[in-house]
Length: 127
Ligand code: HEM
Image (cartoon, rainbow, N blue to C red; front, side, top):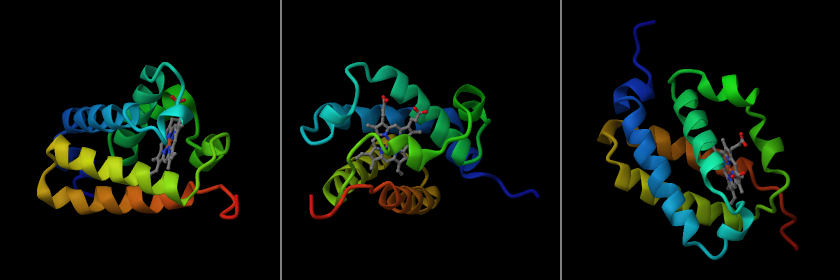
């Protein structure tokens, strides 16, 4: 298989570092989402970076450090409803714009984050 991964097409670690930096800068200022995150954002930021680069075809560093992703299970401690999902996706879309990804890889990034964020919803809609 000679097809290049999104990670390679995007140019490796650098654009993904910019993505995670831009995303977390927005989380920090978001009154809805900030309280869900721990006081120290750095460990989560590193895990996010290692996961996303691995997912898009980079080295398997997330699994080496954290084991199987089990993303939905890892998010169960947080109450994620439609509003939280939408805020998360809006920050990620803005961060994709800021990170400067090549135009041709952007749709794959956006599609993955939209779908996965929907899958993370775990709150009762009546709450
Ligand atoms: C943690 C990915 C959606 C809130 C994480 C981690 C990853 C991740 C890789 C670190 C897991 C670890 O500890 O090893 C994703 C992906 C998502 C998504 C790919 C959707 C595309 C969401 C949504 C919310 C959310 C919708 C809430 C609105 C959190 C919080 C943490 C976390 C609060 C803990 C951060 C920390 O401990 O520092 N997520 N997530 N995530 N995620 Fe998500």
